[in-house]
Image 1 (tube, rainbow over the protein chains, first blue to last red):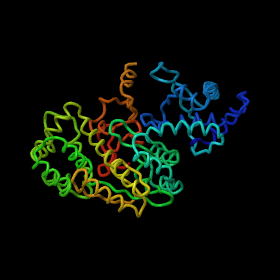
Image 2 (cartoon, chains in turn brown, cyan; image 1 turned 30 degrees about the vertical axis):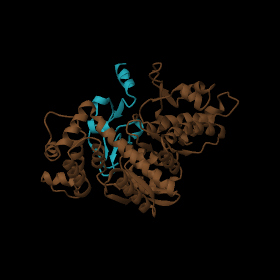
Image 3 (spheres, rainbow over the protein chains, first blue to last red; image 1 turned 135 degrees about the vertical axis):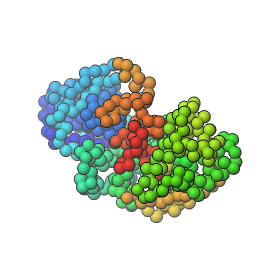
Image 4 (cartoon, one colour; image 1 turned 120 degrees about the vertical axis):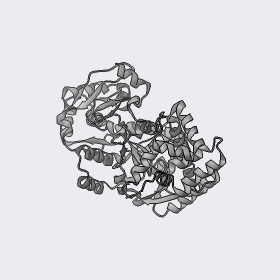
Length: 390
Length: 66
């Protein structure tokens, strides 16, 4: 459990807890509420730092104190540390709160909670939330366990942020990501079954400071992963064999995006490569169906007519469905590989959706098993890249 | 009230982006296909697509410096 606070808040809360007429010292209870309000946008990014954060009284009572939760909020309002939007609708919207200007401007840092009773209570609730991930499958649980030993080199990361991140808002987000990295969360989204945690959400530039028991990390990722998983998905449907073989050859040997660049007479350079890939991807695979085809779609239709029409058909029913199915195929495969490897070798494994990360020296085991499973399950041999966290 | 009713249908919305409350119909198709849950959002409201493509933002542009 992590409390994120600053000196102004600490001073004020000391006063509040001293004068609140409770027999017990609820210093950390107040701090926890304020920390929750401050860090909530980090966990639920629909919200921004300036927003009123919903505080569900039922949840707060369960988390910190059934009898006094109301009073804590009241005391913080009275003291002018927080303010409320005073707006709620039963069953729809909880009252929102935010820190007042005076208490949010100073630099925040992590404070250790010394109230063990409160700490245990909150950690128990968090553990229950994580259990949902463990129930998903052995692979999800294995990765979530490995996450606990992942550490960010705090001082180096902060130095990096100060040196390279110039925009205020971005700097604040990066600082918070780094500071809250210790507070491990894990959820699985119901749509694509992707696992989300501190590693999947941290900015890629900060990954270089993450280690597993002081060992550096590498990731094994699948080249052309989304077009490849599309191929695996398409195998479930009846499509002309020749066309499927051609598509497979393009994805695995020629390179999906490189093939399109050639067909469109587009010269790929180091500078434009990523942008081109992104255009092809959104222009062909996942845009809404439009009456007029984009130039990318025209090429795709010419080269792979049956696949093109099947994608259009699937998108007519629900255009999100294609990508959701891709993510499900991807997650199923990645966690199946984790499971297979873990049952043979207890090596550390983390995932970033379409890639498996491990400690340096174990990458060959991961790569070998992924290649083996691609062969067994789909009779394909995609290219697998190994990259350091840099 | 109307907005609240809309948001209640899908817990992923409204989503604050560049100071505005966005609903499903305001977001790009590519973004929506990868926006599985609120935990999939990055600090800049982008969602992860793949290791080689990176992350896409609600308006359909790509977050190349995440």
